[in-house]
Length: 223
Image (cartoon, rainbow, N blue to C red; front, side, top):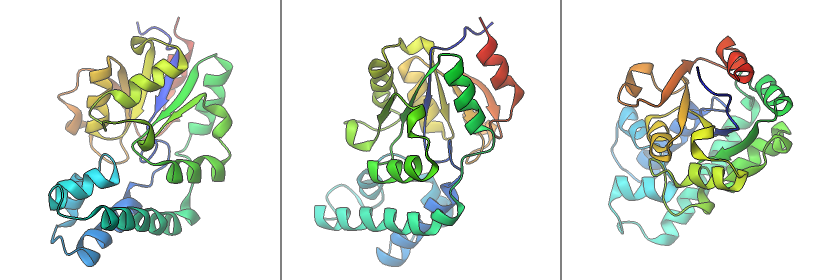
């Protein structure tokens, strides 16, 4: 029997909103059309984790692009993404209800994301959901990106709960690995990757297509 969690830690992109296809489209444009990386679409997708400058360093090699170029294209990417995704911005089905139920159950909630504040604010303020979260940990708040557990451990510390009392919601293997490294269980939203891609992570509780899954309600009622 799973103990009722004290806290939920949510990744943002692909976990709270189903937007990874829009990130992929924009990164593909930036990397291949603007910077001539010569990557396939699948290769671009495989690089989509961590902070923007880390992604650019992985693709082109550390130091290959100047700090000015990295900053320019990092910001350009987010502005293009927001312009493209804004008409489609919505929570994954059932998530608003989970926020309400978790709040009623006394479960604390935080965001632990590689997104920067520019994108986090874009989502929280346009969807009017900021009040559900006791703390937010984004790209500017950590030294190391997922799969390093820093983002989730910092979230737990700020909430005042132990890691083993947290459940993480994620959509990518690197996020599941970060939760594992933090000593936390994870529920995977299959917006971006298939269940088979998480076979190596023993901390996965189960997989959901969206937040209408009845197992989530059972989790809130667990003693």
